[in-house]
Length: 496
Image (cartoon, rainbow, N blue to C red):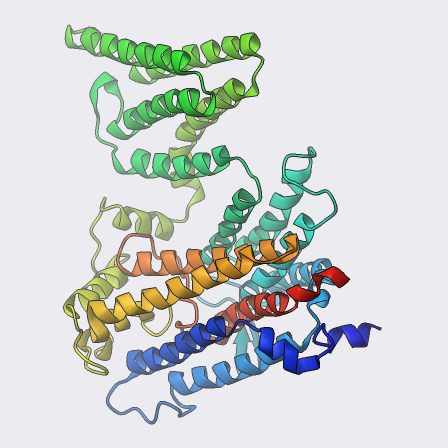
């Protein structure tokens, strides 16, 4: 019975019907991206003495070999019955966690990271393959009978645990960039019913961190401009949540009057020459507002006031943890990269070298680019890792704005197609898995392009289907083709 499941198409017409129901536009977009990626790798590694693009002595030839193996892998995935992936989602996830744990102990130290398993002439990174396993496990959890975020006390704990466990194991490998990629799955939780407050809190945390670290010069009230700005943002968030989330405009007006009046009074007192302990004043203002919201919560019998008060308390606590985390938790090279990205330091020969050379390469491409194999920055090897993490700068220099825009449009088309496939799934398992795939694609695209043009710190995130390497290509191939197999078998969901 199991053999029939694994090697069947899920319908009476066999493999012919299977391939008729496959989403071919997605296959075409996938092929366009991987072929363009191989061409860009050849251009990035070309040094005027190169052999053919198909030569296994070149990075492009090796990548074409990975592409060929990926197509075989994709075909095998399509031939496996779609029910197999749901049935064995948890065993696959547990096996991958065990592999991640094993990697911590047996992987060699490569540039300070223990994340690569060396198998003879081939090296593989288990963190890339754990993405599809984590996606399957998360989809399996949500497809469980009666499962819904918020319906039980441990529903959030179970969902978050599935995401966090691989993150912890990958961090143990000292591979921060790959671990951060898994945070993209929190967008899936939002799609499946997680409160928007969680996303607001995450976005606010990023903004608070950047503002508090970047603006350290003193403002008025004896505190830094960054700390004061964060306090003001917390106050505005409380006002906005009270008006929109709690639907209590009168209380929002009262809070606004209290915040503005108190801050104005503190400013006047300081101006007349009286020393004002700004940090304690801002904390006192917020604490008074929290007490006001808690009183309203008891009177109105609504938890939303309590949620607003908790957001304010956690925000203040997070603010005071920022300096400690930046100084004592982040490694020196990570601190340096963040400072360079935020413009706090200019280190064109050190931490900022890669990004600066990448920006020069992209900027020199202009609108139409310098032409295929005519890029000077890339040919003279000014951009390190230009065939892996910084592959996008090759596109910008040789193909210009037009080529870069077309590449981004291809990715946009693929992401929109994946979302469309996810939305048309008749079962929760397929829908959740589809959004996991879309989340990983969006995160990798945004962070990779962002770090290449200097908007994000350099954290070693590859560009899907473009960056050289078999692990990333295979990982995204498995992610995508499992979704295509689930989609091809959606018409038989009545038989489940």
